[in-house]
Amino acid sequence: MKHIVLFGPPGSGKGTQSENIIEKYGYGHISTGDVLRAEIANKTDLGKTAKDYINKGQLVPDSLIIDMLDKKLDDFVNAQGIIFDGFPRTTAQAEALKQMLQKRGTDVSVMLNLLVPEQELIDRLVKRGETSGRSDDNLETIQSRLNTYNNQTAPVIDYYKAEGKLANIKGLGTVSGIFELICEHIDAV
Ligand code: ADP
Image 1: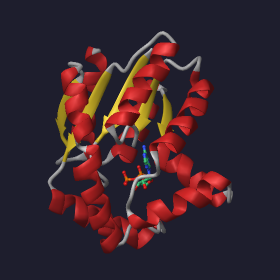
Image 2: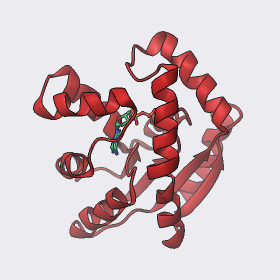
Image 3: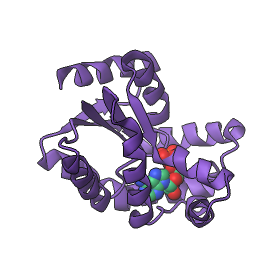
């Protein structure tokens, strides 16, 4: 079973490329952002807690996210592969993922790191905010999300580099062109 960590800053195209990967490879998909938004919509305790962090552009605490993911993983026991989209976002989450997969006799196959310049990210997210209805797609929260990414999430790149699992992918160009690069890496593992 292949475990693909699809990584990159907010606006780098993780959601879009996840859809392409699902369509071509039929893998399971875990987007922690989507799971959190569903929790918010369902007004669960987790949703109520997560909402304030999300609207400030901050990370939801690791312990909550890790518990949430551990439960979610059991939905995919029979999948050919799993795409992790928006997780791990801290090195503590990366460690926890390693342990969760080890417990199940497996490991991360590759981390696909989408590289996109910051101004392009801001432009994309502001544009998305016009139609997404997402409470965090406004300029102030976008800037805070990018800071959070740079301070807390970018170090995860070094974690997978040390494991020999980092694949950098230029995230600029056409969606299909970027997807081709992604497929090359998925097929190689
Ligand atoms: P984006 O990558 O565009 O910021 P996501 O949907 O992945 O969008 O995440 C939206 C928000 O949900 C994040 O800003 C953060 O507050 C929260 N979140 C999502 N995934 C995680 C995670 N793995 N750890 C902590 N917080 C998370």
